[in-house]
Image (cartoon, rainbow, N blue to C red):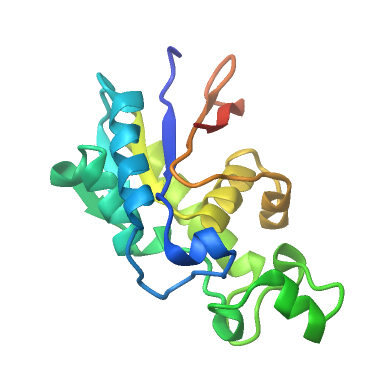
Length: 192
């Protein structure tokens, strides 16, 4: 346990699309039964956690994970926590995109009619400003690509730096500080 505030990040539980590898941005699909069970398992990992605030993406996959983990009653939905807007690539697998657009990389190239890494980074920066204003630990429920950009921005990396982090469904990560509040770090990543 750190003497400084910690930011607990939970990626939502499994959905049909996350299990199949389809990009799931703004399509609001439910958790699978396995995703619901994993979300309940998050409750065990967070038992006894004391935080100043609980924030969730408004997507049902994130908010239902939050609720099944036992934090829904105190959660505030934040639009800026929504997953990357994949635009024309919504519901499409990376391997299918690469057939039409060889060499495409989400974090470098963004999505036609959707967001760029800079767009997602701007949302992450607003969330970080809000987190730091709370002056206490916060629990956040969201989706993979957004949380990866959030971690990159927490460290002062460009949004594209999120490409170097991977998150499994129903995983727990912790952002925090090392020696003082000027040294943001990742304390844990992608814990199951």
